[in-house]
Length: 189
Image 1 (spheres, helix red, strand yellow):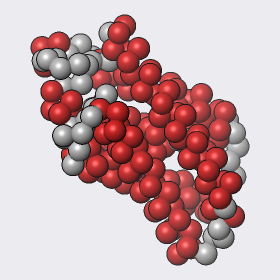
Image 2 (cartoon, rainbow, N blue to C red):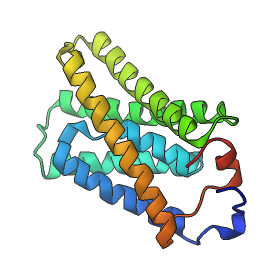
Image 3 (tube, rainbow, N blue to C red):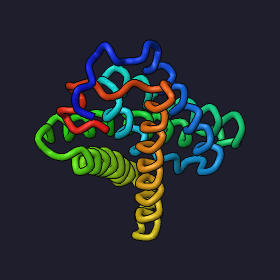
């Protein structure tokens, strides 16, 4: 992957890649409802774009999930549901910043180790902040039993691996640009 230049970037590829990820998020939303792997989306967004693109992408994925949830899956129209939706949105944005922070500190590591660390940072921050909000709100910790957290983790791991493969395929067919030299130096995939 070394040697890519900014001239090799495909015009409009950021938009096409973003649309592809939003389309994938529709499938996740329909299949998993509120268990959409937002941490995985935050990590892939950071690894494949700049800060603005990553933030835009996570917002688009989150809003798509909420539209499907309320529009098709009939999430209850309660203050509690809207509040938790807002929390998920904010925590997803925080996961982008956590993933970016990790990426920026891993410039000398290999791509695979960097990608894994970026994902783990996004997941840890995402789940940690949700746990903190749960503790503060007194909502109950049923969602934090070992089997539930393990299930959410493995959903995110599988999604992240699939999104990495999708990115490689998208590069091959011209729907995404190869990582810029700056992102490559920071461990992008």
